[in-house]
Structures are given as C-alpha cells and as structure tokens.
Length: 114
Length: 110
Image 1 (cartoon, helix red, strand yellow):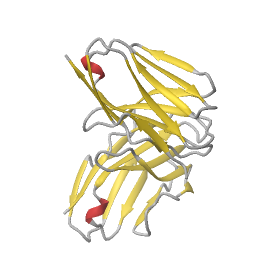
Image 2 (cartoon, rainbow over the protein chains, first blue to last red):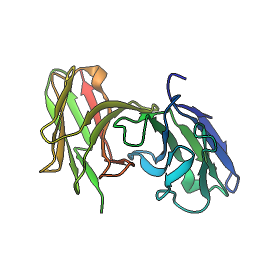
Image 3 (cartoon, rainbow over the protein chains, first blue to last red):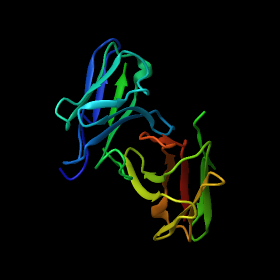
Image 4 (cartoon, each protein chain N blue to C red):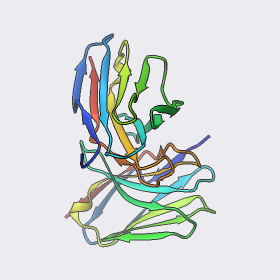
C-alpha cells in the first residue's frame, strides 16, 4: 500500500478483555515499530521487529503485551486482560531497513478500555 | 537516563512572527528527527538531521543540529495559521528505537 495501515482505527473494549491491533507496513519495509502515545505525551517505544523477529521488546510494559510478525510483513500487537491504563493511541511505523533514517507512521489505533 | 526535552511545551504566536523551538537530549546520538502531528492524526516526518552542523529547510521551517551541545532547533519564519500543530523531536541514542520529546503545541493566531 501507499502508507502504513493500522486497523481498527478505534477500539473500545471492556476491562479484562483481550484485544488485537493490526499493522500493515509499507511494502518492502523490513523494520517495523510499535509505539504508544498517551494523551498530551510523545510516543513511547514498545517493540521493534527486523524481519520476523523481535529485535528489541524492551518497551513492552509487562507480560500482558505481546507482538508478532510471522511473515515479516503484517504485525499484530496483542494485549491480554486489558486495564484502563492501557488506553492510548497505538502507533505503528515502518522503515526500509533498521538502519534507514526515516520511519513512516500509520494513523494509529485509539484504544479505550472502559 | 535517556531523555529528550523540548521547550516550550506550549507556544502561541501571531502570524508573521518568528520563533524557535528547542530540543535537548541527554547523551550522544547520531540522528535527530522532527515530526509534526495534527490533532487526531499521525506523525508526519519533517526533517532528519544526521551530522553536527546539519541544517535543513522546508518552506517556513528550518531545523539545525549541534551534536556537541546536544541541541536541535526548529525555527519558524513568518508563521502562518497552517503551521498550527504539535511538533515533536526525537532521537535514537545510537540504537534503532526513537525516544521522543513531550512535544510543543504551537498555535498561530491571526
């Protein structure tokens, strides 16, 4: 596609439920990143993939968060037992390679846990 | 601690005026990025600065980097309403993930 695509654009879920957020990167981009942006804050790093493997998952806040990228393209961020504090905009970005200077961001998924 | 600080956090300025947003980062880094974010939208890449003394300009925006001072600036010349947005700087501190500043919310008043 022309840009990074994220679905859904909005997600409202009840506390304790499981959610999956999807990211479709720019075709041919090998590096993929997930960030989380709380209201009034800058994005915070969650996890980064180079190809299929998670090269750095140091930003995942706890073991309720998990992400996969099984074929080196689409990635899914999974959140178990959601909490109200998980409410935020989840942004995905991709770049041509890991060392490439420019990352392109998707529109984000706004997650609201009620 | 790896930190990126921006100031000011909020900036309200009149059309036609000039102003500068400052971005300080806590330790050595080899890249500095500036992004623009409109309300409810994603991040738009404005500039990538890769070396000490780098200066890039696009329209009324100019970004510069001083790696010795660990400082980048985003200068706005003769502001127009369309520039109203939140501006973020970010750096990678030598690895692949970006650390963002808290953003500068810029409002241009007619």
